[in-house]
Length: 385
Ligand SMILES: Cc1cc2nc3c(=O)[nH]c(=O)nc-3n(C[C@H](O)[C@H](O)[C@H](O)COP(=O)(O)O)c2cc1C
Image (tube, rainbow, N blue to C red; front, side, top):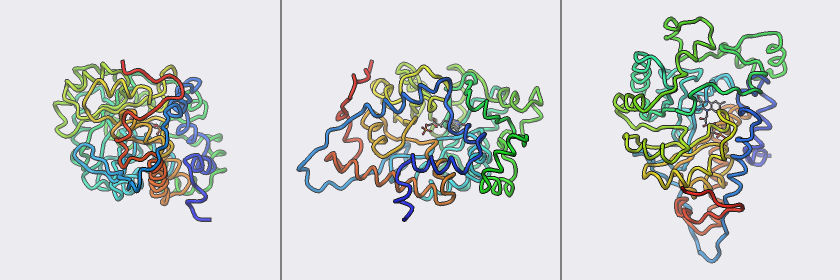
């Protein structure tokens, strides 16, 4: 059976990935916060967006090319920032950056990745996206932006939906600490996952490498507190203005749900807005992320990027029909890499491309944005107020 018959859905990739990643790392990848009800609502809210198939449209060739921030992408999706990708699968950051760039899709490197901007930037051909968790210290902030720019990152993504740490109970119980320590319990989990363990032995214990050079500035040697000290700022509008002033390239703000915030961000000169509830990892009492899209769409003319729970081409069309211009996926790329290694990214891209083509072909339109205004809802529609 060829790969596309064996792994036809993101759920297939997830099942295979789970069998190859040790428990403590899996719990980091696959955990939301609280009872994980926001994560479940993400799925339910996507499923609530429906279309009615169309007939007698003749040959309609799908056109999935999409412009975003002055670049044309062949497909309307890309790679969301995922911290510690290299813990999930060794070398995942560079692999995803290289494969996404080769396919003409944007790759976003997380502040808390296991590879530095200097290592990953060259893989993005000068077109990378760098995600910033807002550092408290102004000098460190400066340094992050200079490193990102000098390493070939064109777009800055400022993530603002982590003003405090979330509890992520399952992740904590899984035993992951910073940097990961080989306790007897973790060692036993690794022994059950030999492919991951061998690859990790070869590349070394993953750590949040981008933060290395600031270690001596930390007020504490406790590594968990250290990350918190550096990055866990609760920024305000002045902070945003500072970033806007110092970053000359396109600036995207990630984690926006309220329409009034979107309007304010547009007024401050932000270039795009990323609607996301962080896949339910930060707050367990929010609506499904897609339910916020119509409201944000009505409040701003800026390009909208969307993530949280996307699993298929149909989901991508649902987001675009609800107001998004572009869609990002986080976990799905990592399921693909953990399940299929080097072949994972290209496999996921092709799977989503096939699903997009098969689905849009039922709807009588060529381009996903032609679906705007055509979505129907199984349960009452989200309001745009
Ligand atoms: C394991 C993991 C780590 C993440 N780390 C970051 C991060 O470092 N920065 C960030 O802005 N978002 C981070 N996110 C959130 C993603 O960028 C994205 O919003 C979310 O995963 C999208 O939902 P999806 O995984 O259902 O596609 C992380 C998500 C996961 C699953």
